[in-house]
Image (cartoon, one colour):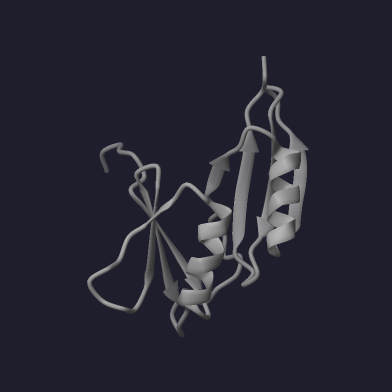
Length: 121
């Protein structure tokens, strides 16, 4: 497989409309894209599509082994902001060898959101 940038992250939730509204608050600079069909949410976050779909028998919501990490300027402030929106700290924060820090929070549907603050040096 050739190397390429991530173009889309698919997120499974019980109610895609409620989750699209919630993630619009998590990523306030995201552009809401209206899909051709009315069966999923779509946010453009810096060129990466966050596609929010209803969970089903094949793929449920919640932690399932893959976590996407988003770069943040201030890990503690971002965890606090997401907590106000209903996210819960799940793992960490952990110190990284390069002086950065990372953690995972869970959205209201149990999915993990990775947060990574790079070192300031």
